[in-house]
Length: 215
Image 1 (cartoon, rainbow, N blue to C red):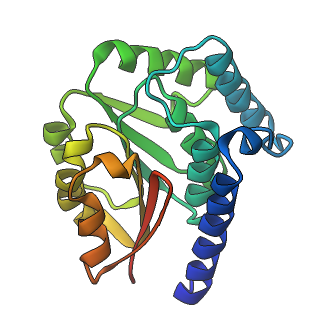
Image 2: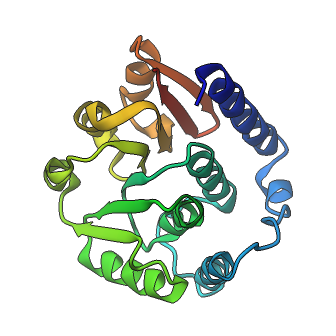
């Protein structure tokens, strides 16, 4: 994709999200996702609804951030997304909404075996088990197995580890790829890392950051 066109798309997406945040979480949460276009999308959205209603979430992103992840992954045409911090699979399923449209795959890393098992159950319910590879263990070690290029990287695990994850995985992020990070105010050194590196262009709003690896 032309970098200028992509940059305009990214600015538009992040600008819309920033406006949504300024309007307040309560107001933003009334904005429903678009009408499902396919049976696959309906199944994922239904699973997300069940997870919320059954309180099967643990330190999950909010709905607006999940929708943002879906928009970013689909806008980039992501074929390989990587997530650090699966939890019970809520943010993973938002990424899967994009990946079922792009034909991509998700590799997601979770420290806790119990939460990983719950996430796998949710992936089965949503019909995306074949789209997702769940890796259990310390992601500081298990991410060493990654070799394939990454289109979208999402960080939502131990905040003190964000800078380390970035250093290790950024070489795999393709030029034009994105790095998203939640709760960035808790991640010491991360904002400095993504705003001072000349190969990166970063937009920060609220507790979320989106970084473009320049072409």
